[in-house]
Amino acid sequence: MIAKIEKKIQDVKQELQTIGDMRTGSLTKQFYKRGDKKWPYWQISYTYKMRSKTEYVRDEFVDQLAKEIAEYKRFKKLTTEWLKLSIELSKRRLDLAKKLLEK
Image (cartoon, rainbow, N blue to C red):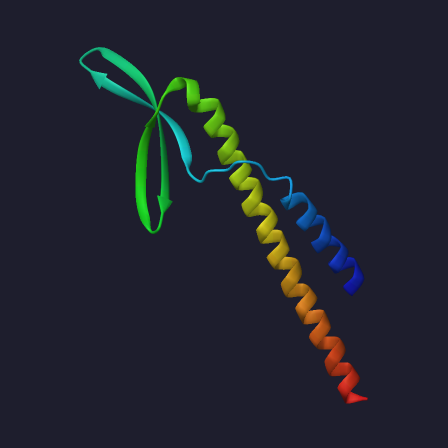
């Protein structure tokens, strides 16, 4: 079972090497309303160094930012999986060592 977990960790590490440009945040379309008219605009909201930030985004940059945000979400998913596997691996190794000491 230890070898299987180690293999999964290696797979995660290999996939992490394919991560491209990334950016944290949420990209949303907002509407500015004045009277009867509405004007759409994009904004990205994120937290960096424990500070919330919001920036306006031009239409021509929306697709690129959406890709970068998707890469960040993929990165977070992979690192969470790696951590979960590492904890399981550590527990298995400790259990094995404990059994060996009891003999």
